[in-house]
Image (cartoon, rainbow, N blue to C red; front, side, top):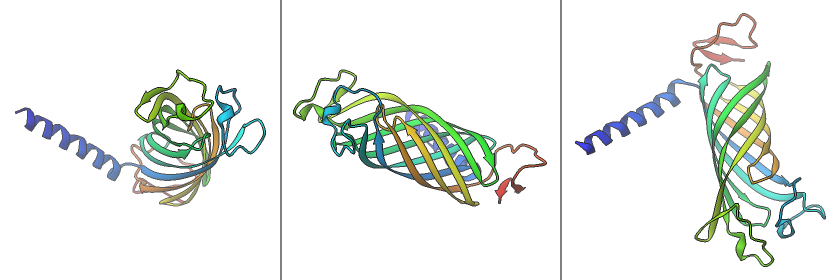
Length: 214
């Protein structure tokens, strides 16, 4: 009986996700980032490699972020999940897993600005093996890796190319702890169907079958 119940719950969850992706606005996005900006004092900034200035504020930190969004209200409010992979300030492998919310602030024709905020789980190859490392108790060890929780915020600009494709530019805070960065991305819309679209007599797009059409 318990196995049957678990199967029903699993199928219900799978059906809910599939329906959400198919019949509501949802996107997938790939972001690329190359530069980390560290404006705050950090106990181990003497370990920063690939620094572009003497103080270690600007660091080469290449990485990419995979993002999925699904709109909960109209075309302005969405939840999103993201996963990022980076070479961090010490040239060590690093990742994050993010879950948060996104609110569109402004739309002018094909241009929009959105604010995104949520929680992060950071992970990185342990710095404790680096000579000169100062113990940082904000990280918890897990084998050869260490992790901690944090917050990420993002201001995103999107240029709508057509019904299924956007180009994005973002300012990120917190993709790595206490770090700002800039990213460029490509967004693909699985579906542009709008949940409960608002009535609008002067919107910059015409609605046809609940789709935005430039």
